[in-house]
Image (cartoon, rainbow, N blue to C red; front, side, top):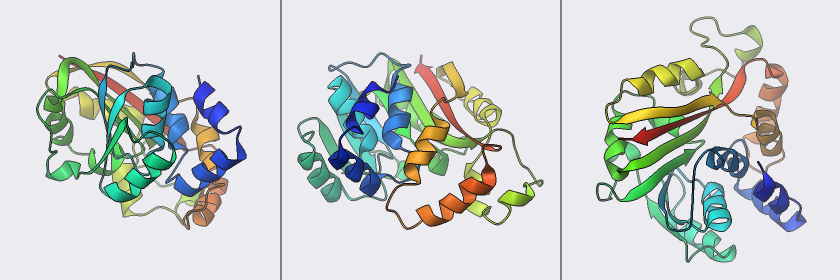
Length: 241
């Protein structure tokens, strides 16, 4: 399932690239597992929404040869363009600035796939977001999401070992698989085709904890406290009808 990611990480230079560009659990590994449940090909136009530093974009462009619009709010298009040139995908990847909460600058039906890794939980936790994105995907196309989540809803009962790390953003963005399924079932114009806990959770988190971002030190403490008891990774795939 992870042939591209494992091969990419067999090179020391590439591992340094990953350590410098990861913004959470290894987005390349998440993207490869999510993509394995889709029929992606070189003729597809994909919106990689919340692409970060482009690890998911790299996977989609290199492994599948797809044309990818790499949209992000936090990382500048210029920074991503330079990065895409350095890894040889600037002919396949279009870096753009986009804020999904303010509307996207695309035509309706423009994409065969809307793909988002380790980002959707930051902006997609309302009943309005998914319906606002559906029009950008052609009928018969898919919306595919991979996000960090919880094995069950904490509610007011945050486990004691997690309380030092728990904050209002985590409370808002981290939810269980059932919570996300219930939210997506409310949207008109799609049918759910897959929802599950992802297999790469532990490995993707362990790889992130080797990264160079300043928040890694705190996340190491958090993951030691979590001990595999509470966190998961969630994937959701819906077909536009």
